[in-house]
Image 1 (cartoon, rainbow, N blue to C red):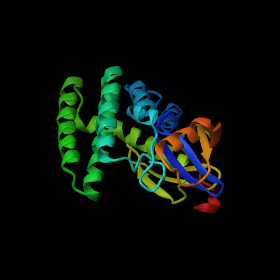
Image 2: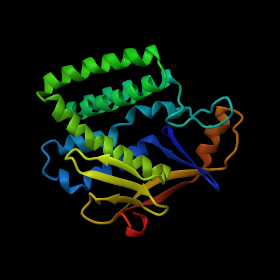
Image 3: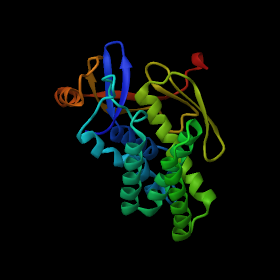
Length: 247
């Protein structure tokens, strides 16, 4: 089991693991014609698939907060999230140094956003350590900061696309692609809609999920048992161009 994306629906809670969300992100990258001849395509795709790999241990004992609600990827305590990203960075670096650099940049962005919301000395210290690590990797890999950040733009993009699809976020979002193109993103109720489409054509991917009754869990063990006995299902994730009637 992996740490959870928890989506509230009328019938209950949809639970999607962080690693399954990341796998969906990697699959979207694999289908992008713009990266077909990219010299670091394999590293980009690996980073997409594995950028959340450090979350695995946490879910060996899934937990709930003081109100009995499952922790999701945003509500985990700070110390836990720091440990998770340290593992994610190191594991990807051990497999592919350039992919690891992209995960370093991803963690740095998340920490920077966290510090905008509230000051935390532990997060500030870890961000400083990551900044030193990324500078060392620029030298080791002989890549410029601009090149690395352009590559990271693709990871950041598919992370967002996967989150929109997994969480069914219906607000239209805009994002600038690494090549400067402006992308519009929306989950319109039955598909992830993109303008421009980015893929060679319409496609449908799938993400595993489990469904739980929406309720307060008395303790973490109760939540863990509910997850362990819930049936796995696969939800279709259609990816389509934007419909003209929702522009």
